[in-house]
Image 1: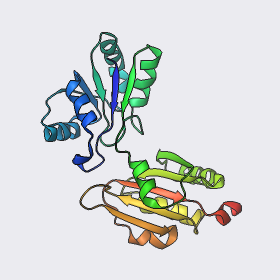
Image 2 (image 1 turned 45 degrees about the horizontal axis):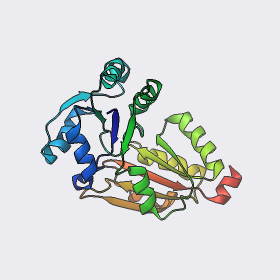
Image 3 (image 1 turned 45 degrees about the vertical axis):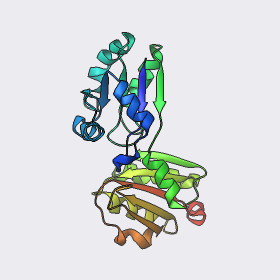
Image 4 (image 1 turned 90 degrees about the vertical axis):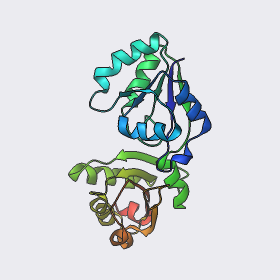
Length: 224
């Protein structure tokens, strides 16, 4: 009973857990960002379910219907397109509403792109900040200055169209900082890039889903 938050693979469909499969099988409805992407996973698993699109464009509109269904005992599973739901997706508001309405929330853990990137990076991330997708222009520069001054490793998502522009901003701000860029993690064409930010920008092939880890340089922080 209640809302189940289920982690899904970030690339390799074999990474889904048996508990996640059992939870999806037992659900009445699946809330998902993109029904096509979720159906690709459930078809792979041989599972047929009802799907409700629940994304940034319609979450507020559909929230009352979902909360009402949960109150009546409907078993909902919330998934994201990839990884752990509620991380950089509209599920946050739904979870908040569940608590406001005394609706149980459970989590079925699994793949998470930020955590996988940190583990693979070998950079110092005993403490880190996750920023999701970054803003653009002057807001990006202001945010990078603020974060770099803290000296805490930073993890964020970036689009292939903006990755080099963003790394150039980091290079200009803190050229000695080390970065790790994970492209298409767990997929067949997974690629990792690691080194000083200014030295590896040109190496990066800007295709696919990208996660970045930044280990800010102490000297650069002192001069910021």
